[in-house]
Length: 276
Ligand code: KIV
Image 1 (cartoon, rainbow, N blue to C red):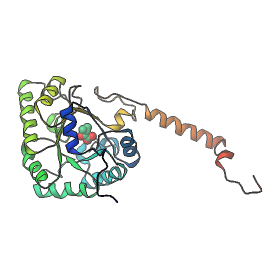
Image 2 (image 1 turned 90 degrees about the vertical axis):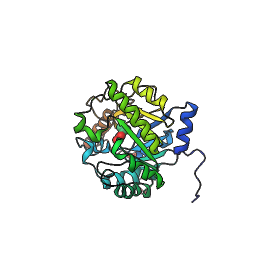
Image 3 (image 1 turned 180 degrees about the vertical axis):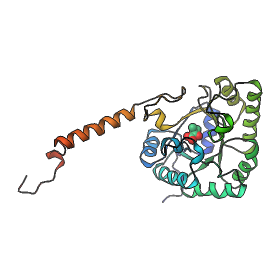
Image 4 (image 1 turned 90 degrees about the horizontal axis):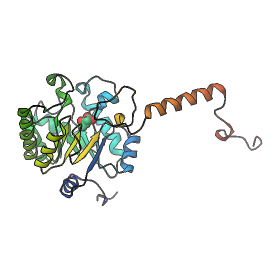
C-alpha cells in the first residue's frame, strides 16, 4: 500500500488553509463503517467520532458514561471507511483529565486504529495536557462553549457565554487553546455574535454547532440531521431527512410482505434447471 496521502486528503494543515481562503469546513459525526463511508464519499471534510455516541448509539443520558473501549471500537469502524476526510476521535470523560501520561496512552490508542487527531473539552486545567499531546505529534481539536462532559457543572445543556464576563473568558480560553497548539476549535451553543468574534480573533478554524453562521465551519450530530429520532432536536439542528420514518416504513413493508407471502418473489428465488 502507498505510504503517500492521496492528493485530495484532508489534513489539519489543509483545514487551516481553508480558513485562510475563507472556504467553509463541513463536519459531521459518524460512529460506524456504513455511514462513515457515505459521508466520506459525499465529500465531508472532517468526520468526528463524537462521544455523542453515548446518546445516539447507546441511548445513554449523558456523555459521561461512555468509555475508551467503546470509543476505540467506533473509531476503528469509521477509520476503515474513510479515504479523504480527516478522522477525529473524541476523548471521553476521564481519559485525559487524570494525567498527561494517561492522556498520551489513550490518544495513542485512537491513532493506532486510524484516527488522525483527538478532541478534548475545556481549557484551563487541560492546556498542559493539550500541549503535551501536540508535542508528541498528536493533533488536538479544542471544544468550548457548551461542553457536554461538564453538564452537571453547567446545570444542563443551556446557551453559554450570555454574559459579558463569560464572553471575555471564552475569548481568553479560545486564545489559550490556540497557543497550546490546537489545530481547530469546536464552539457549541453560544450566541452567533460571540462565535463570530472568536472566529475573527483566531488563526485556527472555528467549527460551530449552535453557534451561528459566521464560524469557519459547521458540525452536526449525524443522527440529528438525518431525523433518526422522533423527539424534536435542539433549535440549532436542521433535519435534512426523516430517516427514522423511512426506516420504520421499510421495516413495516417487509413485515407485511413476509407475513402475506409476497416476499420473497420469484425474482429473489433460486431455481433448479428443471424448475426454471
Ligand atoms: O460528541 C460530539 O458529537 C461532539 C459534537 C457535538 C461537536 O462533540
